[in-house]
Image 1 (cartoon, one colour):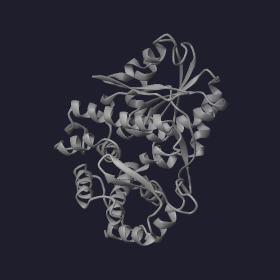
Image 2 (cartoon, one colour; image 1 turned 60 degrees about the vertical axis):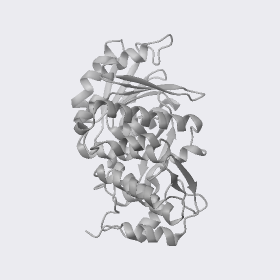
Image 3 (cartoon, helix red, strand yellow; image 1 turned 45 degrees about the vertical axis):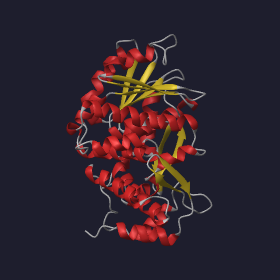
Image 4 (cartoon, helix red, strand yellow; image 1 turned 90 degrees about the vertical axis):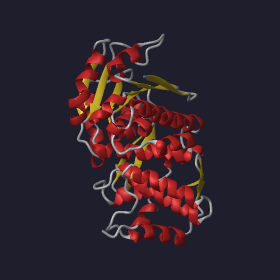
Length: 372
């Protein structure tokens, strides 16, 4: 199966290729067409982590080398806590040692952390060189690899340092999910469910009809292809209308406001990004119900779908409510000291608002705090 999702941005349009064994065709797709995305003979810096490179690195290097690219690698530790400027310096050092030029490119082979860091390094090396995204986690496939958001974390908050830098190409190979840990697969499903709530009610219904969503092996090839293509299409639709989050694109942060605060307070340990987003979605749904924006039955359906995916739906025990509220004020979406929330109104439609009182917010978060 193969699908192509265009991202029709005015300055740099590109395509998302969803294809079985797609990583073996990466080089061909880069040089294909009348105008190669990256000219043959150029240097490519492949950035990955050791675990992913062990599984897929040789195949990607072979796919790039056989069409004439000169490939070097830079391996970084896996994990959100390594998404820092220190890791970016390692990419810069590799780029310098390999003499990357302005017509060179970086290739991100990995999950969202690798994709974000590689994209940021590419955006800032020589004031910007091309980057190609080859996501290997479900979360990165449906979210992080598309749209050009790149960056790293600051000790005081997630993704506070970054830049918009669109990829030249995104290649999604569903088969690489076979080696993805079940917990990481579930984390990606949180972002898929998000698209069902904010944009695509048919996707939401498809997920509800699925018998199981908590592991790759229980999801049919046909359903997985539909999940990937519909999620990527939703992201492309939004990004093509609002590339740099001036308005509509903010809806992609559904569940992320409280989710990012949870991640930051947990020091990116114990709760991964998708799990934090799931918690944030439950909170956003509950806030919307309190404000009479959303029906309780829809909040219950969202909760049931998250629970079917075995995602957490409560704030981790031990997180103090006051600390969580303070962390919310460090979110990059705060304006004039007020926190912006994306709240659902119906399946497929949400709104952005800063009209959430402290009383409502406190009340919702208190009901969601785990006791053990």
